[in-house]
Length: 160
Image (cartoon, rainbow, N blue to C red; front, side, top):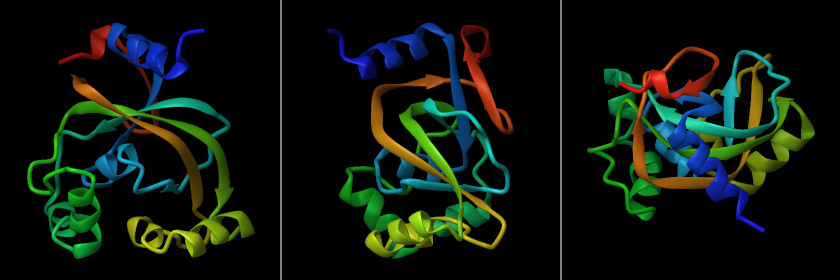
């Protein structure tokens, strides 16, 4: 039986309509590296399943400052990523979106207690939602693509 992770990566490269979430760096890399397992959003989604992670083309000064914080730079460096040369405008890899919970839920609080750095990587203000991301896979070759707000579908025509 073929490895479903490999199939999903091939589907992404072929543009076979996979769901994508665009994140600003350094958060996009932290997700694909498995350092960040909760992505906080102001909105809920019913979608569950494979999710490509796209690094936004823009890299605001506030995000560039975040990467200088030891929490961020140490996590990236430990995974072999240079915090100062993060890729932009590309699909980095994929995760599986397994659940979405309010940030105040006991399951989210338990993850934050178990993974001490996790809380520093997200916005856990009341009323927000935590997306549980599992099985991170970093693609060996990044896929150039335009990003979009919300969840979007990757198609070959979206390649820049």
